[in-house]
Length: 347
Image (cartoon, rainbow, N blue to C red):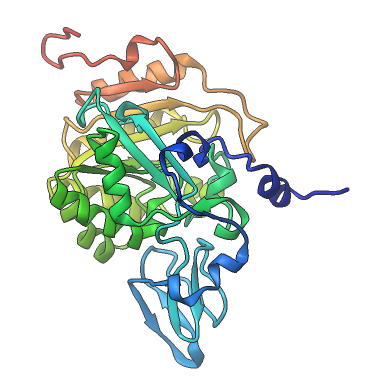
């Protein structure tokens, strides 16, 4: 019997980030499976940030894609649907991945280190990176993978029970489950639980501005410092991400940046130096920058892992440009994971 990729994942539940590990912590939580769960109007949440057009069409204003969506169609992310001129978020309260992680895994190195982050994600993403390590959930529609019902109040309650210091919106792209993230963050803010958004930064100004008062930290994946890379490899744009980084810094929210170095695609010395200089000039020397190692996955299996020497050279370039905290990631045991005083160089 022939099974395509999506059907295979649907049957087997092959998501390394799926909920099975913590499912026992949620007794009585109903598994949601199949498209029928996404056509129950009583459980839908109307999306924020869209405008109505003629003939029941809408234009989404959440992210720079600004999709124009016909009736009974969805935007690029696959989780927001137009129904009769109203736009609905199909994944509110329906995570497909829930884990308790060390906060350093995000990676956040200067954001409540040595604490635990209650980490959640739903299906979907608003770009498509050809090297996405979580492609099996980020590039799926919500009815194609298993999820279960976990409303915002329960997320915060469970985070407290598990003694997590923070709630992390992670694994896929939290921009596409904006309403869910926003509702959780507001409750967590009142409850003394910190919140961290792990994002590609591909979001419009107004949604990000409205969310920032309820976030304590943001980690942005800066994919490249080249517009062509964003267009060809990620189906996105660089400028909106840079605008998001500047906004986060100006609003005084904790910020860390990850740069996944991919051989031949975004590892040019001149580009790395230019990016480090931009970070120093626009964000300051104290924003941690993580250069992480690429491993072949998804649609970039033809490329080798990043040479460790390339990561070390990038780290040195960042330090020479005046950045105080530059790290090497995805290389277990490397001393580039340690924090050193930028003034006396003591670990």
